[in-house]
Length: 222
Ligand SMILES: Nc1nc2c(ncn2[C@@H]2O[C@H](COP(=O)(O)OP(=O)(O)OP(=O)(O)O)[C@@H](O)[C@H]2O)c(=O)[nH]1
Ligand SMILES: [Mg+2]
Image (cartoon, rainbow, N blue to C red; front, top):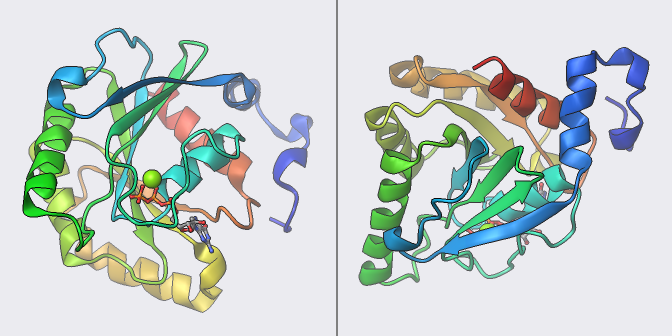
């Protein structure tokens, strides 16, 4: 897609279902809950949830801001490890996006790290609403050991996921091609749960509508 065409995909090019999905994303998003520990995980949310998981600083909060069309709904941080709690953002009781705290930030204490793991594991094992996960990978780095451990956790709880490359404005098309080839090999043990690749850039925003449609369409076919 040509740069800058984000919000002008012609309506007639879209199916009615796709238009409805985009309409949902355009409604008024609200921060509805934050959980610092497992006992604070909300029980009142009824809509399907998409959770965003990935290394600290990979761009989880930025992607949520992009999808919701809000500059600072999920706060962006220049300081890695800033999103310490699980944050829930809901639109019209139709859809919820879940911002999970980032992993692999070296400066975090062991106690904090354990607390994080316990919280994430509780959420991944217990959530009834959680329908799909976006596992975010920095396109400049590719899949690392820690990401593979997370995939194993997703496998343990049988949670399907999109492998979502972020910051694609920082890489060339050839590099993306290589990234996909390498990733396909690493994803072999997870092929039952791996849905598809997504490519995102909070800077370029070109494909935001396509991204919304991919996620929305997946939820609708469940
Ligand atoms: N170039 C570029 N920078 C990005 C992109 N997405 C995020 N960033 C930058 O990466 C940094 C981290 O982004 P966040 O969205 O806060 O990352 P996060 O995964 O939520 O980080 P934690 O909450 O600390 O785990 C910020 O400085 C963003 O501006 C992108 O697509 N392209
Ligand atoms: Mg964040």
